[in-house]
Length: 124
Image 1 (cartoon, rainbow, N blue to C red):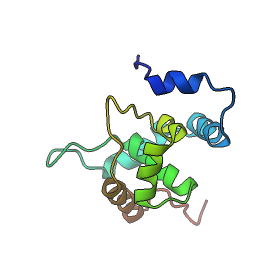
Image 2: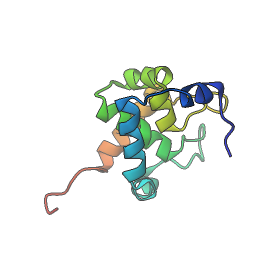
Image 3: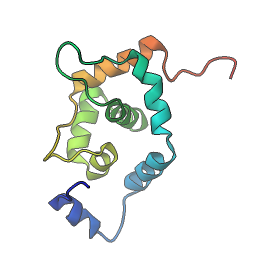
Image 4: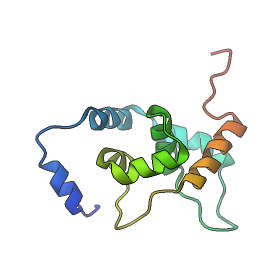
């Protein structure tokens, strides 16, 4: 069980959820995360060299925030630091981990584009 932060306690006492938070909660429920992660796994670095890779689901969540809110790589990084709703969607607790940086997202996005992950084929 994750320990609740002071921010979590404070936000839980609010009287109203924002439309952004409601949208992100719905997306979190309906997206088949395991299925989407399995599409990326064969192409994702294993971490045998260099620093360990960030979890695929974390990177997918960051990429989706970027797409949904039309943000740049740096913009989505800043927005996650700034927005409780986005941080909650990402599952990031600042006591335990940092937000992936813009360059990491750039490399992840390029991987998805190069491998054609997420493109609809013409026969669908």
